[in-house]
Length: 450
Image 1 (tube, rainbow, N blue to C red):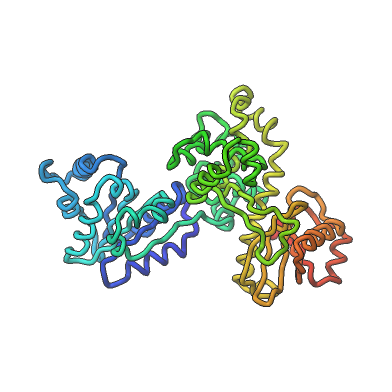
Image 2 (image 1 turned 90 degrees about the horizontal axis):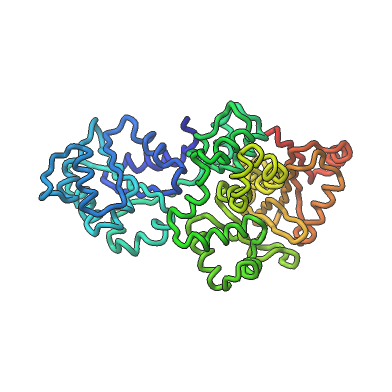
């Protein structure tokens, strides 16, 4: 089922409708849904599709010649002769989709030159979509690699993960709590969503899709890291530390024995690939009680893999999926869901802000990571009107004492909230509900109402 991607489709439609030939680079993580997006966009259009392989220029040309029965003599094979044989079916502006184009660019100095010549010399208008699964390549290497040829690119569009709202739409049969669990583990990656059986519980899907040794996602954690990075041993060491609470530079240094300089280089590589992010507390909050320079695994599936599987693979083999889940996952999974509820809350508050449903229009959004407690989401406008939002997954009932504790965390951050929002899986005590009636600052939101 295809969900979301309205902005992406509109961007592609706008560029396709231009009365000129153009070349667009569409990029994003493997599995984020780029192929489904371009297929949906190509429907009803005069389109052709090519996939690049990571092989020599000669071999790529040979493969395409055989794959599409172009009938070009091997001695005459070149990107120039091949592009001129590409067949389009239908009428209207032509659409040429070249998937994983970076493989051709890396292995040939002629690919882009011939492609741009082909586009320029065509009698008809054509839109070329160059699709890439390497964010780091497009954002950090492409321009250096191709030089002035990059000036011929009409636009770049990064395909981000789908949202929590998209996941809720996709899994219409699950309740909101199950959707939070799925989003915490599988993130916004539709390629993972397709592996989930809506007839099974979240627990059963974890056992079947991830923990079972024959499942397609069993080794996905390491596959994510090894896709573009070498020295897997170093990256896995750092990721295992981050997943298990050692998320400051000095903590990584003490535990691993690696120099701070070395760790910084490897962290930078992980951040360029959007596998790790550096969390900074809200910029006008106090730094006195905050954690400075905290690193966090950004990829949800990678976080789950290193939190629960990587350091217990021996037990997983011995126990099997069911006993492993009951012994090594179930006792700790709610704490994991608590951590990840902040991402759902962030999206909820951001959408509410965009729709004008908050007490004021915020211009900044972030979080505050404290030593004795954190503020999950902070929103502020240019006049410093402030909303502090807290999340609860684990407590069955949120009390007035809990609210007072939330307020004390804001005091630690030296933030003076005009409004408090509490998003909770559990109920709210009668005392807190009564207090809310007399305090217009306080907004209590039941997660079930999402």
